Image (cartoon, rainbow over all chains, first blue to last red; front, side, top):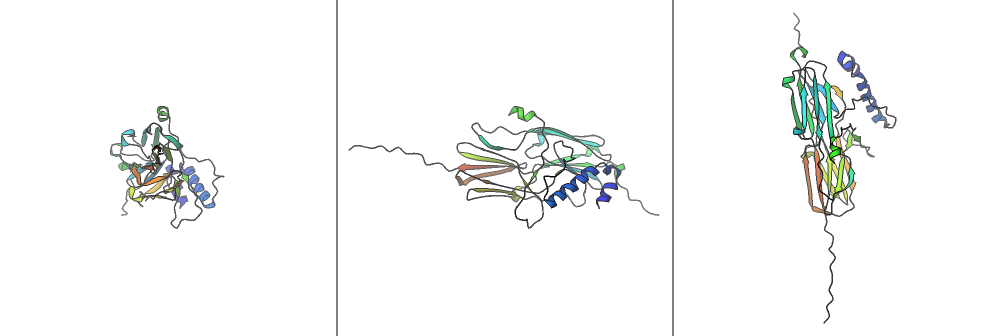
Length: 150
Length: 136
């Protein structure tokens, strides 16, 4: 199944390393061996995204907790989508003494190149419970066509 | 504070929680990132739990142990095929031991844009009374 997923589409081949990386992580989890994990081959650019597709569209999802839609900018071109913005961690009242501070604020900007032509003017984005979903419709020429056998 | 907001954000992998006991339901469990601070009168906990809706969030406080548990349901429809997966989706779980005595009736929890804001009021300490000795 992995073989089919990796090699069936030449564009996906580029993601093979990521796929292998993911498999290895899953294996590590099964084996309970996180220490020996190799450095990851992810893009390393915030935010981490999950990209899925169906026949008609790509779906880009990212976890962006505490980011308001006003602080997000999404741009689309012929075959790429960029997500940029700022995560603001508002200052708390004076005299607050911190025990832990793990949440970080800052700027981010990420470009995601898609493997097929898209319709930039029909890209839709939704932000719900801190999860961003960008729906990117594929261009007509990129959609699979059913060929009738005569 | 202002300086911290302009720096570029780095990717941070979700921290997976290793549970001593196996889960009955399969799935990954993550520990949410939190900010905890306190003032004279209250303790505030902010936790990043993207994808959790209020109905699926469980907050439990007993015997000075605060438990945060966020359940998640996958948003993907089964017709979608993975192309690139950089993060995994799973439940959130984290426990804290509180040293202060908390007023159980004044706990306030809000969940906005995937961030939980939990405010715990401390029990008012007994105010020392001054006893005036009167001479008869």
